[in-house]
Image (cartoon, rainbow, N blue to C red; front, side, top):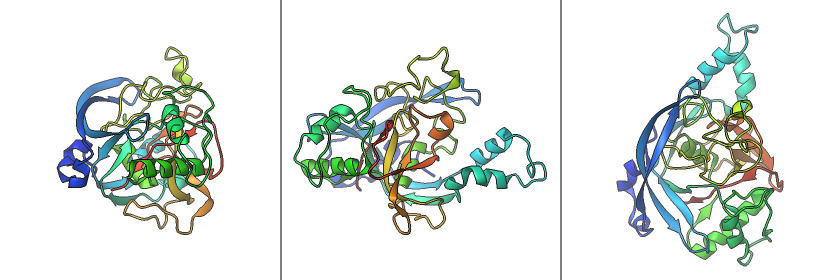
Length: 319
């Protein structure tokens, strides 16, 4: 299973990684009860470094490699069984069929083993986007201000997969490192951070901890679910020290779209064979959708040239 934190596997870093001037950064995580009430806060630490080759540094977090169950977990299957209304088949023990109909994109669950990598602590901000958009192009132009709502520390959105790839290419050239979008497996592994629950907070989500459309948002932040929010403003990261993996903006991944996990790679690599090349995977949900679409294992797709409100990205530094 995945380590509790990135720091716990830090001793396996290479000499090249040591040259990144990583620092141990402390933070607190939080779990929620099944009813959404805050539980115990836990102190944790992760290794991070700042990519300073641009005017707006990117905070990169070390994620130790490991093996995890990717896709719909047994915990989620059990919860779904309880939450589904009584319908034909459930009482006779054939409840897996309607669940497969609802969650077929996340099946079959399969174990994936990944090497270590670095991933950005926050979603790429508009300030960081402008810094890279101002550099000479590699393959295509980048708009300086593509986002639906303007703000330096707001996540950039309304950027296509192709534009996110151009961002990575320019950042790689400027930094002389290899930056890219995360693979779908890397994204889910980083999001779960060792958990097997629907959210890295547990079995429930709260608008106090993530930015999504929530009917229960009355009495909470009035802006929750109505617009993007400053990266990291929800307060508590996951056990790897990563913020906003649930909600705010959904995030592009490298992989071509596949309707399910049948035949998916088990080494964490980008899945491109036999996929739909017109679409790429997006993960994490956004401020425009309900909590069910923000789960760790939830998958969606978008056309490679689409510029959708609520779609942004974060970057990975290759092993």
